[in-house]
Length: 132
Image 1 (spheres, rainbow, N blue to C red):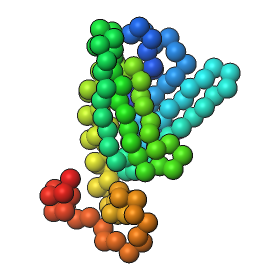
Image 2: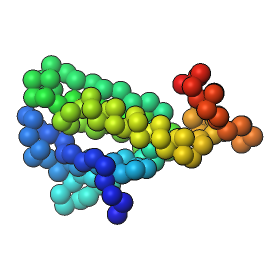
Image 3: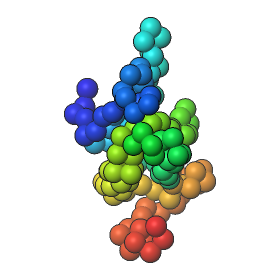
């Protein structure tokens, strides 16, 4: 099991009393839920396309929020980290880790755009700074 950078639980009324757990390693985002029947999902961070934050009035009252992660992952294209503490900080942490993993892996244009074209060029630093 890789070392975790961050972990939290889905919260109910601000308290971590659910069986849904979220965590992030250097290169993956994980979801584990269930007590008797366990479901595990993971997204490779370099496949993340967009990250957004949602905080309803009730979530703001209890000091939580939801981070929505959109990815090019086939089995889990959208992963919602619901009712987590410090949701705006977590969103930024995920964003920074995603950018680091994309730079390390030199993500191809077709991976980001899901165009299916195999002959695309790899990004260089100038293109990343201008377009993204």
